[in-house]
Structures are given as structure tokens and as C-alpha cells.
Length: 301
Image (cartoon, rainbow, N blue to C red; front, side):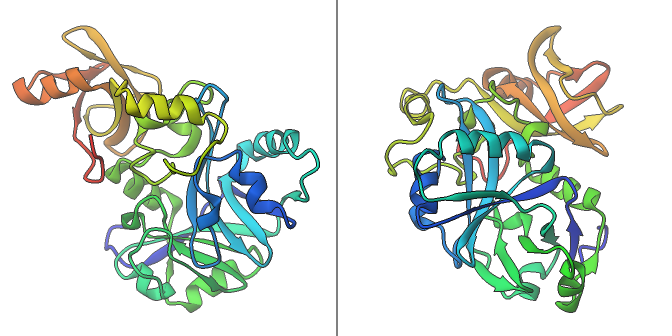
């Protein structure tokens, strides 16, 4: 979206799961990294489903809508998440459903996008809209808003709010420029560490909610200051490297490229070497492509 106008893009790579039933919040509370007591029709959250060892498995946006908690998830991996949630259902009074055919997910972004939806620039602020729910992105308001709407009529509802249809690639460019990871494109399942990828700064973790799966190791990583790598937005001078391409400094591997597009990407880099490259202007390389890293504005490291 070159002119910055408020617009929307239907995200075909996203799906929707629904958790309903009287135990829905307490069921998720023991499994996910954020505090489900904060989720409501007025407050959306960003959260993680981790392995027992505290490694990334899934991430999702979620909000309460008409007696169910809707999870905005990776479409290609939604069946895996649904299967894992069902493993822990036991006697909980919950129903777990794939609602991908019923609901569509859209990103709403650009100048004035939040105003068009009647939302403040406050992470997670939510309201009903078009038979579904819209909310300021709980990770970072600079990303705009998210909409989970009935699939039939989603486009009409958004265009009725004065939003122009845009390409999902426009939203991806915005995401990359802000340094925000996009699920398993940037976070390797069963290997990625939440704090290495800035997910704590993106509001995915409650540090005072009590136990959840992977909580002990996540807390240990934070309080023992064990982080030696971070995910950086990078600009590229040369061809776009494939995800997984090693990043080197003076011939030594110091990280690797994640997702990218049009001269920008994300890269997981060792903090010491990234700082050195900035200080003495040494060249970070991914193959023959020069890589220039910068700290995201929202990051606390």
C-alpha cells in the first residue's frame, strides 16, 4: 500500500478456531502463556502455546465473541493446534471447533485504519463489528487492527467502513518493517525461544498468571538473563536470501535469515556480533547479500 491509505487485506493464510463452553477460559488458562482472565469482548490478547520445555509451538491472537473464544491461527497448522488442545480437554466443559470456513481474518492497516473501525491506538482494544469482532493488534498498535468476521460479507463490512481492499503483501511489508515475526515463517516449532524472538515485548506472556505449559523454563530464561540472540528487522543489499540462509560476520556464522520480501527481512542474530557490526561497520552477509540490522523500536533489549 504505497499511499498509506487505510485499507484491509483478507489473510488467506489465517484460520479460526473456537473454544466454547463454560470452562473455556480456565481450560486455556492452564495451557497458554497469557492471562485468559484479561480476555473479553473488549480486550483481545496475543498468546503462545509452548512445549513443556518452553519452546515455541503455536502463537495466535484471541478474543471473546458470542460465548466463544476465537483464536486467529495459522491456517496450515490449525489442525495440529486443535489436536494438541483436544489432548488436554479431559473432563473440561469445552467444545473445540475449526471455524475457518465460517470466519475470515483480515488485517486492517494504513493511516486512519483504527479510526475507521472506532478503535483506539491501545493494544488489544476490541469491539463488535460486522457480526464478528475487530481489535487493535494486541502485539503492536502500529500493525493496525485485526478483524475476525463472518466469511460471507466480511469484505462488504470492511468496505462499508471506508476501507479499500489491499494485497496481503502490503501488510507483510508493514510487518517486516516493524520487525514482527509471523508464526512458523519466523519461529521454528519446537526450537524457537519466545524471548529470543521478542514475544515478551509483543505482549504474549503474562509473568504473574501462574502455571501454564512451558512456564517454568520461560521464567528461568527471563530471570537468569540467558538470551544471547534476538530477532532483528534487516535491510538487504542484494538478492533475497532463502529462509534459513546463514548470516555471517567475517566468515563466521552469527545467525540466519527468516522471512523476507522486497529488500527487507527478519534475521535471528547473536546480540554480541550484531552490536559489533553496527559499531565498527563490519559487513553481515547472507550469501552474497549484505545485511544491515536495526533494533525494533518496540524492543526492550
